[in-house]
View (cartoon, rainbow, N blue to C red):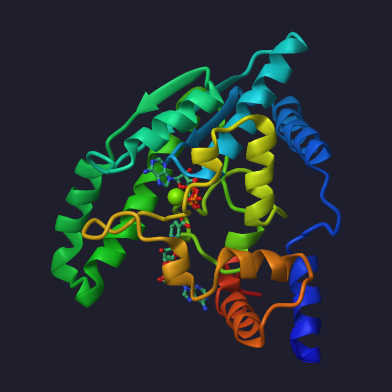
Length: 272
Ligand SMILES: Nc1ncnc2c1ncn2[C@@H]1O[C@H](COP(=O)(O)OP(=O)(O)OC[C@H]2O[C@@H]([n+]3cccc(C(=O)O)c3)[C@H](O)[C@@H]2O)[C@@H](O)[C@H]1O
Ligand SMILES: Nc1ncnc2c1ncn2[C@@H]1O[C@H](COP(=O)(O)OP(=O)(O)OP(=O)(O)O)[C@@H](O)[C@H]1O
Ligand SMILES: [Mg+2]
């Protein structure tokens, strides 16, 4: 990596609060406490999180469940609600069920996002969705999942957990106000391999921690691996975020994507 890339790498690592050292047990303790403390401070009734079958929501969900159990062990009241939000029938539904077995949520709610997604697609189609319709519909799916979670959070007086972590944040790899919308992000600062390590330590099934990451948003092409879209591998992103040397081509892709997606990590630009 050239000196400029090295310099930008350091800035990005600092911006995303990726720690140099990683101790899995203390990460788990601090992140469960982060979630428990938010409930103590806000008086919220618990947490809501959509569970896909991927490792991020499995880990975020288990941390949420452990946090509400901590509140209850102190004599308080709190509940974790896991939401299954398939678009029709999900090809990897078995993975989602495996994640739920690991999380052991207090409650699981199933909501099919297909009718709402399809209705929105029909209603906006006359505006012209262009030649990337499946891509735009994917973002509608992510936003319908946001709507479903916020309905339940509102009704229960609960907060919505987000699964954003450093490896996604650096690439802006989420739908703005879709899966990017949430009340707090307990996985912040972790790269992908550290999310997996937390999952392993918490006892997640190896099939969950080893599952190929996918946004799984395209109807005509389910389960496209994130790495096929990102243009870099998670290992390269993870190495970059740990301050390691990666090849210049990967570094410049990460740095350019980080720059281009700055608006997705920021609050809306206000007039001043
Ligand atoms: N410079 C700027 N300043 C302020 N706002 C700006 C902007 N440029 C675009 N925008 C706004 O942002 C919008 C584009 O952002 P957005 O709507 O998010 O859309 P976009 O970033 O184009 O697409 C979302 C990407 O995230 C991926 N994704 C989504 C969901 C989950 C996961 C996953 O990992 O599971 C991945 C998905 O595969 C896709 O590649 C524009 O339509 C515009 O409204
Ligand atoms: N089919 C789905 N059902 C329920 N929730 C979903 C679904 N797809 C995505 N989500 C929600 O959107 C979030 C973002 O998706 P993302 O793919 O980044 O995470 P993941 O599926 O948990 O893990 P991975 O990135 O390894 O696939 C998920 O963590 C989950 O909360
Ligand atoms: Mg996924």
